Amino acid sequence: MEYKITDSKVLVTGGAGFIGSNLIDDLLLNGNQVVCLDNFSTGKRENLEEALENPDFKLIVGDIRDKQVCMDAVKGCAYVLHQAALGSVPRSIADPITSTEVNITGFVNMLYAAKEEKVKRFVYAASSSTYGDHPDLPKVEHKIGNSLSPYSITKFVNELYAANFSKIYGIETIGLRYFNVFGRRQDPDGAYAAVIPKFVSSLIRHESSKINGDGTYSRDFTYIENVLQANHLAAAVPTERIRTGLVHYQQEVKDAPLSSSEETLSEVVNVAYGERASLNELVVSLKENLSQYDPQIREIQFDYGPAREGDVPHSLASIQKAKSILGYDPKYSLQRGLKEACNWYWENA
Image (cartoon, rainbow, N blue to C red):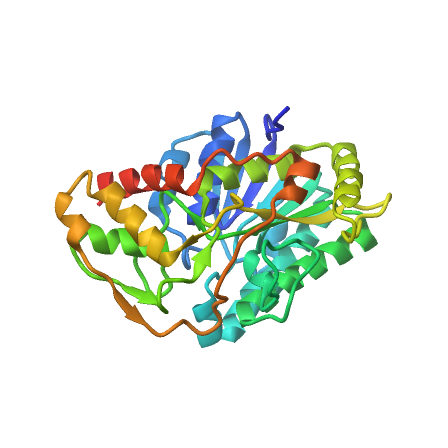
């Protein structure tokens, strides 16, 4: 059985962003009332065009650094899907203060508001950057290394706060460690654009783009549909089903700790597809997909530059825990996701 959020009032923070707006559309399709909280610092109003026409949707323009705004936004909500953050490793290196204010102070404000409102569950966007310099592949949730950027520190601190609030106040929390999410509406522009939309945009314009490093760095690229599934499951799977899954997971992975007690629930799981591809392989796949629309794209060559500060060479997720406790079953491989994403970018170029 695949659990979904239905007939509920849900707050999505950062709802005008790439992941948040996709979540909102999906929640509305499943008969929910949805509140979006966003300050439009990185989100875009055009991402909410369809939602704004729906009577079950409410937009609140505000900042998660304002505690009262958070308190007002969560009123009457059964679930919180917290996506609001300042993403990007390079951005956090350039401006660690703002990243810390938004990603930690804003997170605690929202977590506190959810606790006060007694929401059923607080689901939040964690990050694969938390693994830092830990060398093991695939990445398992209970083995992390030293943080390589202010961003990764902020996302790890989120997990600590979530676990602490769960223990002290009894609020149920699930953190989703996203691995390189991509798909429709992901912004290709700006200094901190993610690699897939950035490369796609360049190829459509017949422009060369720069690969950081020699192209052998690899990532577990995760299509947006898999992320939507994970959020639904993280919010809607019954607590006892999660506890049973944790016992099974601990039996399968002998050194895995049971972080939730019988009184509280606070877990973190990887959200990925469970396979990795190098940047060089990614470029080949993008050219193959886009050349169906424009054969000249196949001939475009990419440049190589120095590796980016704060980047880890390789990333690959174990999704065993998410499968065990949530029933997570990602349907979109990298190739299936790239086909849909390239089609969307081409139609919206």
